[in-house]
Length: 350
Ligand SMILES: *Cc1c(COP(=O)(O)O)cnc(C)c1O
Image 1: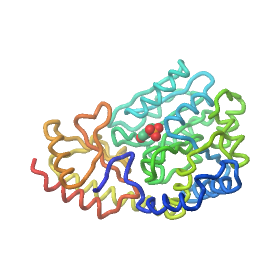
Image 2 (image 1 turned 120 degrees about the horizontal axis):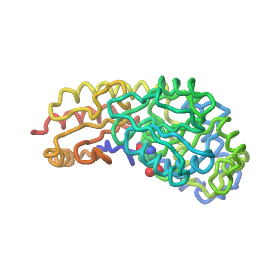
Image 3 (image 1 turned 180 degrees about the horizontal axis):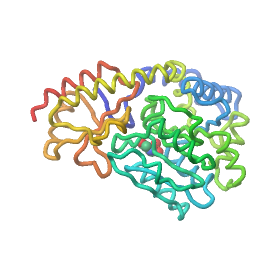
Image 4 (image 1 turned 120 degrees about the vertical axis):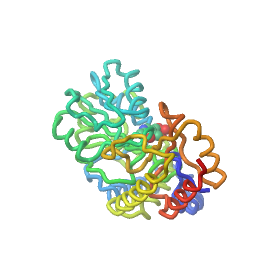
């Protein structure tokens, strides 16, 4: 079976071995206040920073999901309101979720073919951006993120990287809060989220002093100072993350492969008459999640054709559920798998 679902997605193949090793080495039955666990946490954070080029003074917290990151940010870093810029379902969910906790929260929606309109940003204590909109295959590039950083020096900036962290490079200095779940572009089993905070974000959390929740930034930070977590964490997930980080190349090398695979897919998909990119603006095309439009009358037949050929692709999402398919371009998927996908798509009788 070839799996191009954007999440949970194909796992790195070495996960099989690491699962068995995790059991055998005993780490899963070790107390999370033990020296062995603390060492695992320290090594994982060190590797994460080294492989993904995260500044050494940023804090890393191990949480359960990106959804939990939305909640932590809303409960730890917003006094009055945040501003959410989005063009798809995940950005909208983040906004709606935050609005429940902070009713003054504001939104700015933009179009599927539009570059994020930086001129529509109003000064705000926290600006929230979905860097890779998994629902529609669009993204916000590093140049735009830098522009926002330069224009709004006194705002905190939070960026959702759930379907791009691990596949492409980011300049972590250009925002304060970055987060992802690991079951998408990181090629790991679900149940672990990574929340990365700049020194400024941590400072702001202490100024606001919102510390009512077990998972507040302050509570997380206090525990991480002694290489521990606020609760018994996903030890297996952290163990697997550490081992995958040990194996993978630096993100600079991984990104080259991501871009190569994307240009191959872009060229080949453009030749297939029954598919079109959902966004018509190639400047905002996501590098890691491809969303393709297809006639509603043919979509079920296409999915059946792919399944018969042992291929799983992503369904459409939200507003685009019925007329799109999605293909993950994640680093754990080999180039030869993309070649097989293209060959089988070409055999579809439209
Ligand atoms: C999948 C996804 C989420 C939610 O991730 P969970 O692990 O289910 O919390 C949030 N944001 C984006 C952009 C996503 O793709």
